[in-house]
Amino acid sequence: LRTIRTIRVLHVMRFANDLQMLVSCLLRSSKAFMWSLGLIVVVLYVVGVYFTQLTTITRIQSNDPLKLPKLQQWYGNVPIAVFSLFQGLTGGVDWNDIVRPMMDHISPWMGLWFFLYTAFALLMVMNVVAATFVESAIERAGKVRELQKLRQASRLFKSLDRDHSGYISLEELDSHLESI
Image (cartoon, rainbow, N blue to C red; front, side):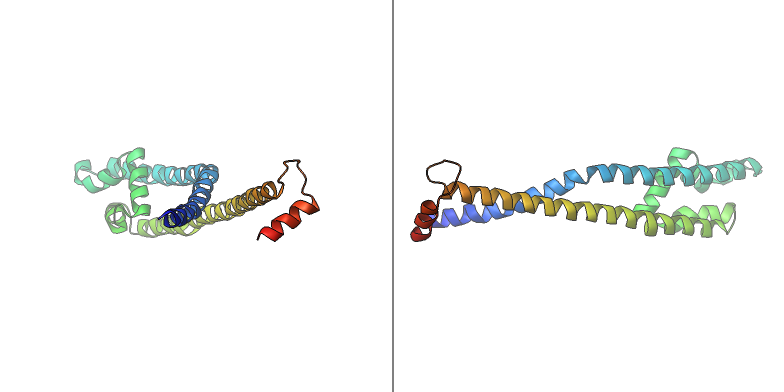
């Protein structure tokens, strides 16, 4: 039973090293995450302001502004427009539900503008964000592995240094090799 417990502890320690590496990578990439989040918010804000402005102009020019409830629902003000665009990017709302009121009430060309916004945000910004996280994680994983190897080497040298002098003599090395 003691052998099984020892094996279990060693097995858990191996996963603890992997967990340590994952947590370290997540913490290390938090700076890149904040910059990426800022970039996405800026893109959402700029497009949200533009779509809100178009919605407001359309409502003002309309004879009956109350006939445009869907347009008002998705783009009534800047925070709502930014939230709607975020939902469209992340799959919270279907793209057609968001763009259809603009195509019906403003211009059919708004579908193209929405497509270009979505393509830019998903294909360019999100890919750059993902690449930044992956690069940061790979870099950090390499550093964590290197630190783990250094700790393991330090433990090995401490076990070889039986008289705790800070040096490994030839006799200490020979006695360790004989005991193996």
